[in-house]
Image 1 (tube, rainbow, N blue to C red):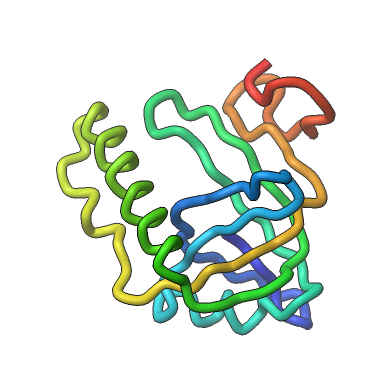
Image 2: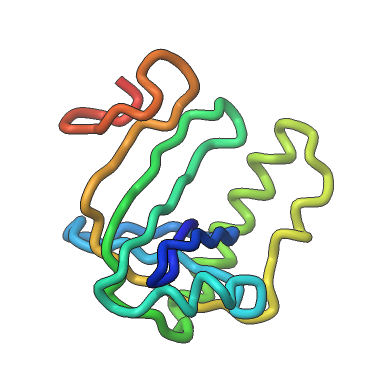
Length: 139
């Protein structure tokens, strides 16, 4: 996930457990509080952010650009979501012989909710960087 300060200085952090709301209007992503201090300082409501996500199995990915709505502590449902996502991620990376993905976990998470403004294809190849206007993202 990437943010920028008021003067445009970029900041990056590792994000976890992306979740699209059932209505598709918002996205939640979780970051480690300690590891993401600089990004979190940039994430006041109305500020812009970008989240890039991809599959460790085939490298297909997308970047979602959006506007921050809120940052808050995760609730019990969020914790279950994070744990489920972590298990799925660990199973996926095990398929490509990464043996210690547990190091990706954090002590304390923050839920970042944002409203997507644009989605871009990030899969390597001739379509990388193109906006996804309609249709399945891997078309």
